[in-house]
Image (cartoon, rainbow, N blue to C red; front, side, top):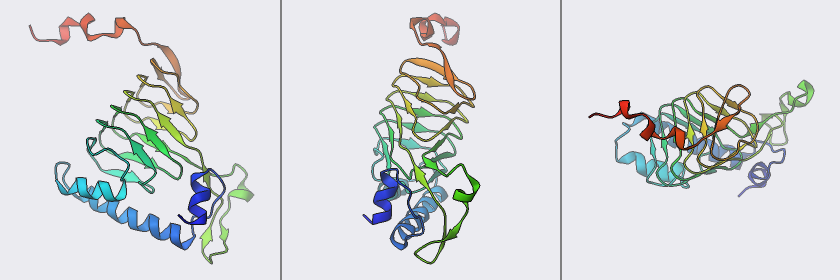
Length: 207
């Protein structure tokens, strides 16, 4: 692991133009693009996913296309599902528990940039390339969550297990386990209880 990659993963300011880090990202991005060109049911997808995102359990089904920054910093437990257009920018670790379901266009974002324009501006770095100040914070999603379509999860957030995040939410802060949360910014609406069981909706089943 290069020096800049170590700083990146620990949440420090790092230089993304470092040759080793840049080359790694470019190589993994090429594999990601090849993955996206294949059918969702192509057996070759599993081989590619294992190479550019080795910490995603092979039992997971990612319908694709998917867009990962590095891929190798994503840790996804067994039996997760993601619908179309999952985007994960993993400059810091993204840990997703077992059995998490994600709808279309879910975006999980660990990167951060300075708030002040002067500190955010690009410059020529020590590696002779245009670069900028970047850092990040990890994201954790507990097991058996449902992340609905068009949800954006921002840096440093932890979502507790068994929680449902409603469509279009922007998750800016930690959400506890076992709740329904929605909105922008995302907030807890209520706890999930036995009243939410499908057994209370017989009209959904064939007689």
